[in-house]
Image 1 (spheres, one colour):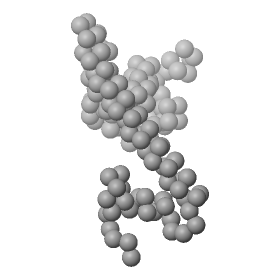
Image 2 (cartoon, helix red, strand yellow):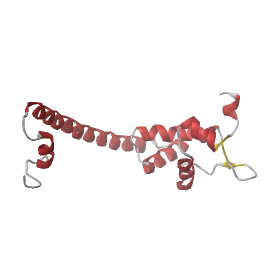
Image 3 (cartoon, helix red, strand yellow):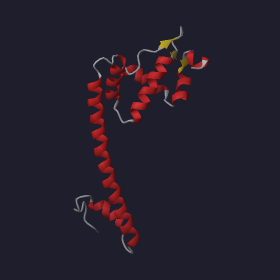
Image 4 (cartoon, helix red, strand yellow):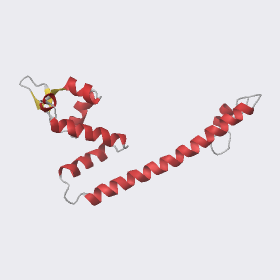
Length: 146
């Protein structure tokens, strides 16, 4: 760890380093994802190495689509890992199932968009894309054609 990273950082430096807004950092502290951060005598926040590690963990968990509530649970498991493995596995399995379901939805959407694009390329009148959106996925018209 560099000498600069070993010293507590002000909120502005942390926002630049991690790409988080100051409001986000304050919010994480407010909801308990981040413990109360050290302060200077004048009350300015100073983030230490543990805070930065925790913030990186939060960001990574968010990229894995965990909610803030789920991240809170993961952080508690991280602080006290004894016996947490089955619960972490269960939480991760639920998240995996959600991702699998969403992938199925995205594949269906991709196929539908591909069909609309092909219809559009082959059509001389009307707009198959607009008409396809109006029809919806179930084939029923949402509004009558003028």
